[in-house]
Image: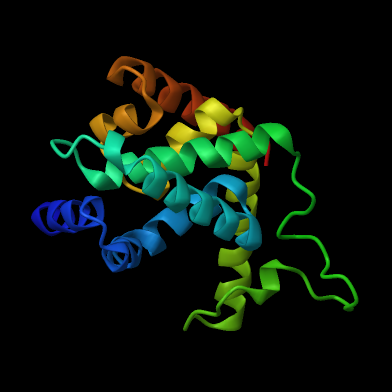
Length: 187
């Protein structure tokens, strides 16, 4: 995969704009997922992902081809999401009612699974609650928790994305987990 990415990056640097579309196609879903988990809003996540790719394109000459592109683009997306979170408090949550509708929430618009309706409700409520608790964490802990447990990245990758030593990443994950644990005790 990295060999393909390096070839595509070389083509982009040589002026092939179509090659960038290939790069976006390879990473768009994962970048969107990171953005969505950070900002908790589909439209905002799309904006974050788009801005991350724009920044990557304009700064591609700074990319070190000895490193993984995925780590670099995730770092950009995470930074864009953090910037947006700092500038603006969330306007709505998944539990909010969709304007102009009755008893229709944003959460209810998420894709359905094959589980029974009762299981879907329990799962949705639990996910909503856990995501809500993650969203209440300070951004520095939220970022580490999302990248570790929701994106399943290694400590080294998280360290590179957050531009922090691995020991600091471990501390932030630990403190984020402890904060979540304390909140979960109060059920």
